Image (tube, rainbow, N blue to C red):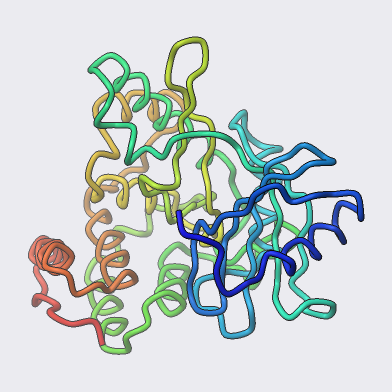
Length: 312
């Protein structure tokens, strides 16, 4: 965790006083994430006694989605599942009163999955994987009448009628490199027919990596305590999350799949579509590390397309 930087403590305090009242006191504040014109801060308060997450994004921020959409998704998940979710305390994307957008949430306790999984014995690991599988299935049971972007009211904005059309649109949003985008769309067309089987639009988290799952001790066992960061969520084919989870190391197992399938079926033809979702992530992430380049080559080989060696 970094020391507080760029955004001064008194600025965050001023915002929290506006939200909670002049009596609030910021006891501690740390930086959880810091990017150009964007920051995520963890604050411990008195009067009220509360831990909160404060997300700030200025006009030049590249990291943040639309916070009003993120807040709407948190509310949908809280209403539609049994999963532990933070409360949305305040959200404002207008920048009328402050020079940035902001989202304030309650902070749920927990240890990130990436730090926990290596410490678990086989029994505890199996339980944790079942927790993850069941939680992802619950998210995917939230369905929408169409594919597309979720707006600040929790509805689908500019709906797409088919999964294929939705993926074309989604790729245009998240793949920065023009040639990378063209390569993905060309690969998508080669397997277009198998997307005809995808009929249901559901909640896609799109970022269920090992830092966005928290676990806490409950009655002597490690139980899922929070799913974080719904900034990328959209109404898409839920199996997109499954493909990413399978691609990332340490995220799935037979226990995961047993718990997932107990609540939600995997759609027919998913293995054919899986490498396309994985390629989409490779081109979105677009890191030139040896590991990422090797992963990208492996997916390209599975799809039978030329290896993508750069992401422009």
